[in-house]
Length: 561
Image (cartoon, rainbow, N blue to C red; front, side, top):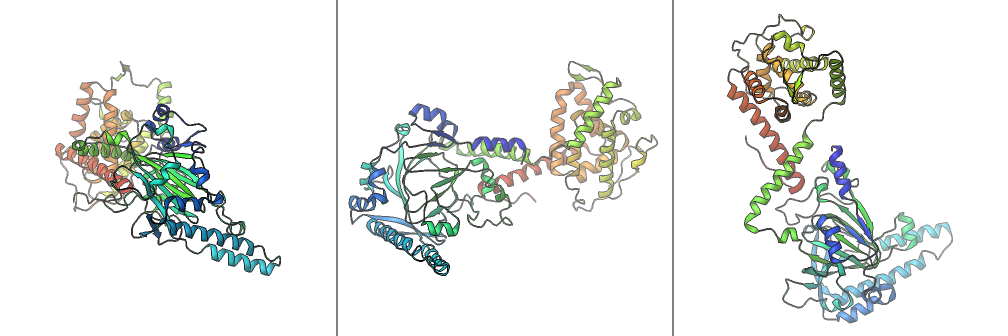
């Protein structure tokens, strides 16, 4: 990843922290409009739910009585113990009375109390080891049940929500009181749980009502060397490619395909960067976290954590006009492809850049710098003597020209009469015949040059590359023809056309026309040369498009044959 992109992602994941509730205007300006997370410490401590729902203060009895024995809720049953993946293949939805879930939580508390005593019954090392093993085994038994996204309020539901009565104990945070809420949801786990890495298509305020900083008994935590906290890990949408989102057409398209416990880097190699581009937030009861739409997040909850979240549709999405969707998609894909192409572009060799800088300084000190007029080069060597064109190349340019010609000669058979000897580069007796030459081409791709041509082009300033190409048109036209028609890598074509674009502001209109006329005159069929450059350039863009689909959409497409 290039340094600039890394800095942009790092800047994005800096989370704002507030010790006071913002006004709706402040929230909209400072946080929501920038689509960045924000932590609001203690902003919901005034809720009645903070004291009434607390399991350590009789909150389970209160919840059971408040909701009543007939209320039925839908829970997630995980196939992976405490980890809850979003894919239906890894969990199932089960219906049960809310009172039954609360009863299971009470049973769990009693179990913890009994095990807490048993862990400290004996002082002998032997008994201690036995008790620790018993404690660990009992507490590590899979607890697969999790109340996730149980509605307290839903704008879409016509029937009464099963937990609607709990709305009396909470209040909408003041900074989103002007939002048209889509839903308010209740979340609760019995034992430590972890949600899969996913994003939501709505803005989200997550409020922690209850939860222990230390999730399991001290003896068990000490044994496992792990203390569970209510922790949310966040990734910006720009880190999407490290998370391998599920295919956009799939049932769990908003979830990451990377395993949370044991990421397989042979399958998901980019996942090694996941931690680097993430941010962690620890939430205590009374805290709230704004998670913008599209931000990937993973939630680790301690034992008996209770949370409430508020969802609403962002103005960005609500303002989108449906008949413009195809246009929006093309614009966004175009921007993502352009960024990916920039990321794929070879970086200029620092060594070559230094050589160029030194050689340019040497030319300036010797009075050899080409005269300039109004920022335009006045003498580009287009109509100069052939020997003078080679003489205009600095040592670094000559070295790169030699390397480029060697690459062509090694990879294309029967170059023709351009019999090049690297030790004889300045020999004016080199064959420069412009008669048509036949270049063997069996239809197969040339031997791989591993991006060397693109690296050479990238290492040169635009006018230095122009001098090199002019030298090839005069001295090595068949080599140039072989390079463009048979060896031009997609990345090299992209670099070449970018250099042409950078070159144009440095030249007058007449100089531009003269250069392109001279360049394409080296080819028996100038149209074929232009087609080869444009086709390779489009292949590079298609490769970037494939990467974008793979990284952001979770899909691959087959390109043109």
